[in-house]
Image 1 (tube, rainbow, N blue to C red):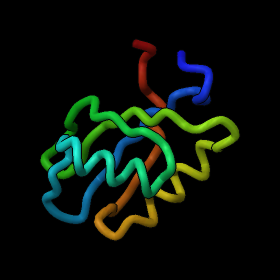
Image 2: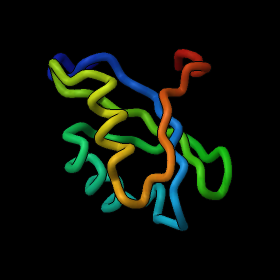
Image 3: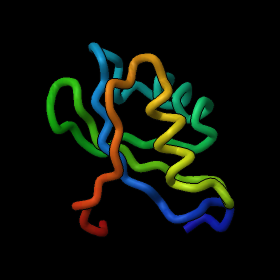
Length: 86
């Protein structure tokens, strides 16, 4: 693991409407807004997707979840508590 990042966080994000959920530019924009890199993992439903986020050192998972939830196109976000280590 890169030493500049904390422990990875997997999240499930449900979007309000269709978004380019795996588009690199879209993910970079989200990453800038939450101040952490975000990587697409898989889709759960057409509007719900799983991502891995690499928090910056000192950035809490709660902070990331709050920032994601505050984005206008996000309906709901939660930690993926049933994720298996990859």
